[in-house]
Length: 334
Ligand SMILES: [Zn+2]
Image (cartoon, rainbow, N blue to C red; front, top):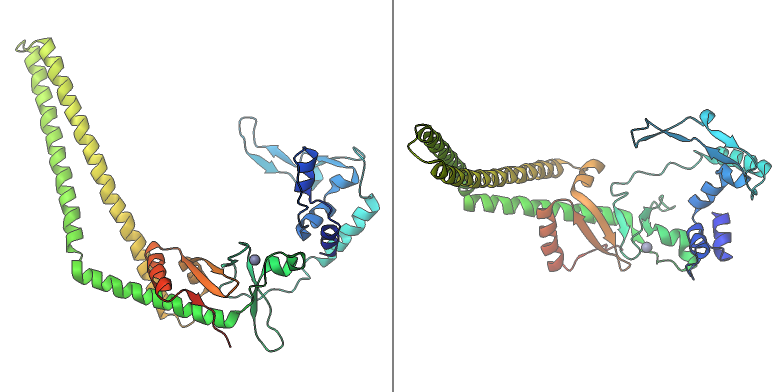
């Protein structure tokens, strides 16, 4: 991180900017160096002048798929170009990187971890370890990392208060959904939907019957033609007309069948949501998995306003009404 910040302060262009300049594109930005870029450079042997080939190979000459080969099969050619890192330094750094690997403290697993985004910069909201008073705070990760270079703003908030309030909101939205569904069912008694489906099926059957009738007509006409009762010209004209009619009916059937199966998909989705809500409402402490099923993401504004995005359309619609009426959620904390 220190190396990255040193380069950022010195306004050394990051690789993508450097490439732009080389290609002649005028780039006035310098960008901010990421730790991962430094790590990549420090662990990439190409900077020592060595060229590595044959890391991957095609599965077969017909296939476009590649497989990765083990390191001992790579072809390494040293001193292919000017080195910017000496071999000794490279090996030293390799050891340092190896020794720090895995020494990071394991992060706590919070219920909403990974779902929180900064509304302003689109980056992740990081959840920090408890402070000495046991308080847990969320903060924009980009601000945390690059705030000193004027990137974004803190978006600080008390995570515990947030979690409690969002769970309450989630519960309210779920309850509202179940209430709404109950009302809907009483109103419709879901009979009309059933009868609608029944009517479509009946329609399909009648179309099928018509097709059969038309096909039989064609057979009779064929016999008539063989017996010389009608001319070839008459036969062809009528046969074509019948074939067109049959095609039309077949198309109608296809469309109706799609309509029914679309309805069935919708009910499947609804059933999944119903089960999920039932499970969620029965849980005292919901699991991370179930939260992920419900929520796509949560955006945090700098004034602590919170926008919740649901994975299910009906919940999202309810939530929209909800948040408009209540002027969006806010993390109220003491
Ligand atoms: Zn941010």
